[in-house]
Length: 135
Length: 150
Image 1 (cartoon, rainbow over the protein chains, first blue to last red):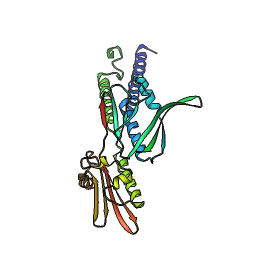
Image 2: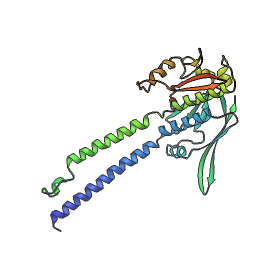
Image 3: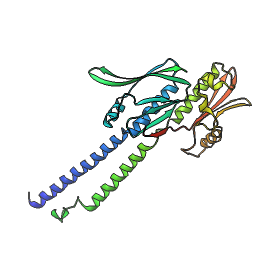
Image 4: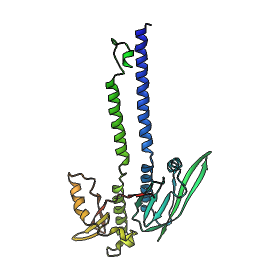
């Protein structure tokens, strides 16, 4: 192969590699953004509020919070009390910067908010459990 | 870099190509940030749940009076005039309203062609109890809030 041909191939290889790097970086950015702190805080606050709104007194709710654990760990945030309940509002916090709060309209009381690590088939799951009680 | 390559061959690594990549990248980054910073909208689900709860209460024979919300298990303070929720129960000529009454008009407007994210999400339902037709209209415009520094 002559020098001209070698340069042509080299250019094509660089072109393909740069494209892969660029679109790979974009993909990583989108995936990371979709599992960001703000998105997860909103997601858990709203999910818990909806669960409470649909629950009857006496219900015990367990929720897998693996995603939240991962984000809190990344943010060096104390995970054990990432969910708080105050004045009919669920407050979810996964970083020191801010929290997200969402209200529920059901006239009930939330009790025994417990966070626990449960081992299943050699894998540790992070579970949040709380009880819905009559006011 | 371009000068290194054969000028007669088709050039791939041009300044235009980098320009196109920059535009695509900026577009995707901006779009993603806008999409994920937007609120996850559960107002329709809330309106549906309120509607179901009201229908259950009426089915259980709870009378519509001042204590209706409390007896139904709603937090009464969240259904005042300046709140983000609304319930309207119509039985014949009789109409009972709880919560922000302006939602009645806004729900009506939204039923038409006008789409506005600032208007509440509403659910209309008709049930029949003992031969009586009961119309239930519920709405939610609650959006939650971000608390700075926890």
